[in-house]
Image 1 (cartoon, rainbow, N blue to C red):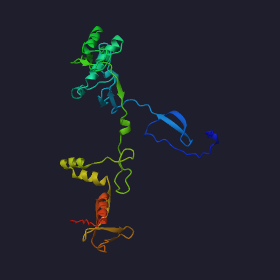
Image 2: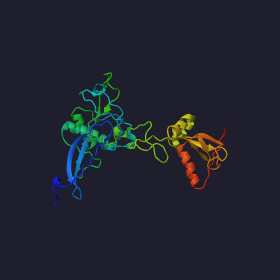
Image 3: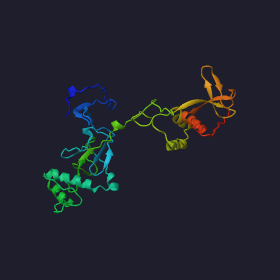
Image 4: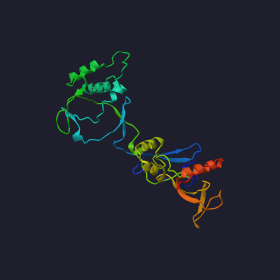
Length: 302
């Protein structure tokens, strides 16, 4: 039998909600529940109201997904003679390669359905009863209600007020807002956290990581001849490190920063030591090779 929450012994466990940066979250509901060991736990559901913005992803129910390219003021939208403005303008180049004929039929059928006030069956396969709406029937309904038979409309430009040169295929359609939103993906950083072992910037947006310049990006920069940029991206902005190199044996030495004394542990003296800059990951590689009994030697030119 479960005891009342007020009778149990508790210690307070403070937890803070760290949501996305700059978002004001609203507590939607609070749920009191218990786990398998009858420990009381409190769960908060947090919601955040977002309006569509440039870069958010939308899709119709035919896999025609895309991101919002621009948001236009209402008065700049094209309008039909009935005064209807589209809510969303889609680029028709998505049709030939993807062949989503169902989307066109949905546009046509929903336009006819809105006009005559009944449901239209929108499958390409028809119904067992044979009452599926064929495009010819839909076109007849459209013509009966004063629209063009193929669903195209005569539109005026919202900016100039002049009629558009072409008829525009338009109608009501069902669209969904997908969960890939630009607010969750936006990421940039200057100096920030680094990894312990290689001292290079961390990876990933959640860990406030850096943007990687990989092999292929490096090839592009080489093709442009921007060697200083490569040097900056791959070392200065990443993991610069000053090492002491022995000119005689080519191995890494040490420096005592208090006494400024330098020593090469192989030659046992500090006569031939020069300082040079390396990526820390490069120094790490040399030392890992040395631990496997491979001696990488640096040859210094003047």
